[in-house]
Image (cartoon, rainbow, N blue to C red; front, side, top):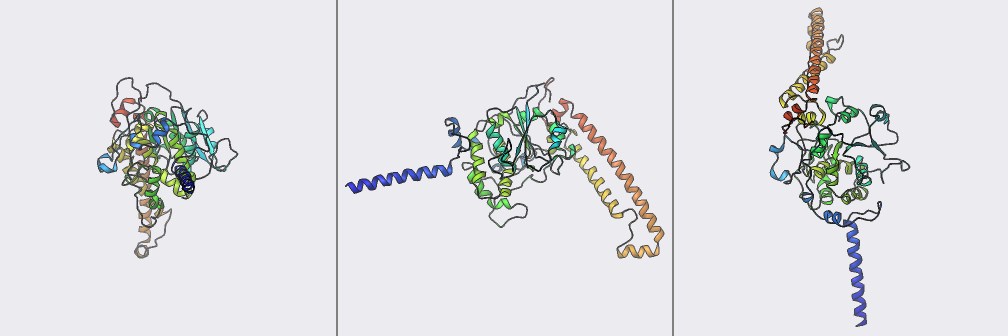
Length: 415
């Protein structure tokens, strides 16, 4: 009898230890930040994303009609309400490496409130617990560190000023994008991708698959497993999509609609996952939109993004597409002019034969063609500049912005 009681006690102790160990594996840890707050946050941790408080509306998208019902989360987020003529407080969060040249921030944006994290310098005043996951670790660290003292708008940007994934209409220049960003648009939408162009990332990008690595999309092979770990209560979407490349703006309301413990949980996932720095970062590059909009695909119409987001308004999608058609014409002319060169000799057999028989005529034809192409390029550049200036002018009129984006507007509403 005594022996049976000892065995029962040992079994009970073993069960308690097992349960505690299991909970430590599946629950977010705040060991880096002190004890958890409990209460409402703990309750939210065990609920699916689709039941979180709704405060901000998902942005206007021109792929909604293309999505099958199961590809778009049912619950939309309500619109924020920007106050006219209000200067919303703003901060830009920038992840950087110690060797990065970030002097452009002080030079171009001297009055801007900036929070710079140095990923590879533990001695820096702001640094993440580990240099992993690309910008994800730093974005989440900022949200965790500043959850109770947020400005109205938080803009997450990379440390380089010029890059191919910045917006063409704003010179691929991060400083222009930050200056032009419409605060009222961010308040309305809650989540705004800073890149307007769909390629790469839209209308579909990552699909869960278990096949071999796809060139350029190695993360697809682990996407399903990662989704189960990050969003265990939410169904796996058919695909994830948004314009690349992990630069976006958030409203304070949108950030606070998610409990702080969720951000801790996600950062702990980055710290613990055996996935590489590259793969873990890529998974999140196409997951932010789900976290902050509840939609697996977030692809606002490009002309709407440019107009309401940055004040470049072409008057509608047709005029916007016409601009790109003219730009394509110019590009083709430039490429042909490069092929001809200043005095390009004939190289193809047909050209050599023609050159031997009509050398002077061929040379003249090439010269005439070069003159024609240079004139075409000049004309197209002038037309493109004129259309862009007109689009920027239209963007200064709040009513025209609202009309192009299809949202209601009354006199005095501002942007």
